[in-house]
Each structure stands twice: as C-alpha cells, then as structure tokens.
Length: 100
Image (tube, rainbow, N blue to C red; front, side, top):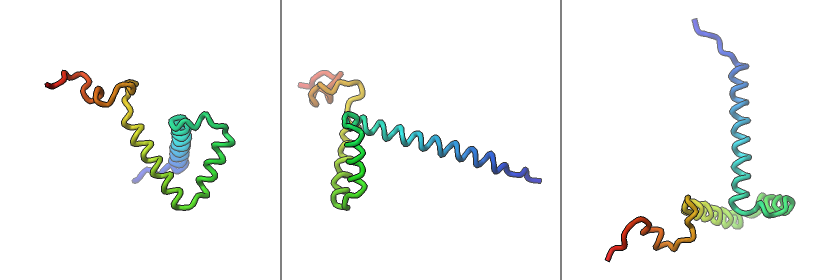
C-alpha cells in the first residue's frame, strides 16, 4: 500500500523555496544597482527612472535592452584580479615572452 502524501509538508517546502527565490531576486537586483553605479542616485530618482522604464514605448525599451546587454558583455570581460589598468596588448601577452 502506498504511503499517503503529506500535503502540508510539501506546501511548506514550496513556500520556503519561493521565499528563497524572492530573496535571491532582491539581492541580485541590489547587486545590479550597485554594478551600474546607480546606488549613488537618490532613491526617489532611481524609483522615477524605473517607473518611466515601465511606461516606455517598445522602441525606447529595445534601445535600453541593447544598452543593458552591452553592459553585461562589457562587465563579463573585465579582468577578475583588478588588472584593468594594463593595455589590452599587455593583457593578451601576460606571462608570455614576446615573439620576434
């Protein structure tokens, strides 16, 4: 005979998972605000910008989406160790002897 399902325990587990996902989303949004440098803006100004984004037309929203995609591509190319002051040619040849 099959064991009866504990619906209360399953619902509690799903509720905990949903709470964790909401918390993770909030943390990622905060990290994004900091990474973009928007944490220096007053909260009222940031909220106003987000509200205008919500009401933007499709063409403007697409331009903003492209800028955001370019930001993430640029951010993923930054060196992890903070050596972003080196010229690009030095970065590509780091640790290698120059070829003649």
